[in-house]
Length: 189
Image (cartoon, rainbow, N blue to C red):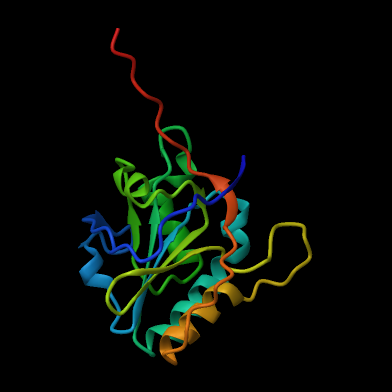
């Protein structure tokens, strides 16, 4: 199901987490991945066609900007019971296939997605050097079947602004992607 990202308040501090990495199985917190100039938190999933379209660009952006002082992390919060393609093991496979150079964390309880108010994949949160949210929205204008090339422009413009101490672009388009697959509530009957 196609979904737009939620509206969140800019300027808020990061939300911490302690989640396992599908690649190394190590536990990571926000401080572990925080970059000197800023940090990008990406909510993604393995099965979503919107994520599959941009996966290679996520790696290019991380490789281009990590050396400049930015931290990167991807988080999957989908219910792997309903969507086995999004299991911890398949996250490892997806990360290997796309040569992820950043941790790919599993939010099994979905608490982190709820705390961040993430509702779709992909969804991007960019924090400045003080760990304050300065951007929440799309990677770029590319979508499956719209014919626009994936270039990461929206995220790159924000990272360039942070790197060059310029003001953050005012226009922040919501991300569009697959809805996060929430676990079914257990009835208490």
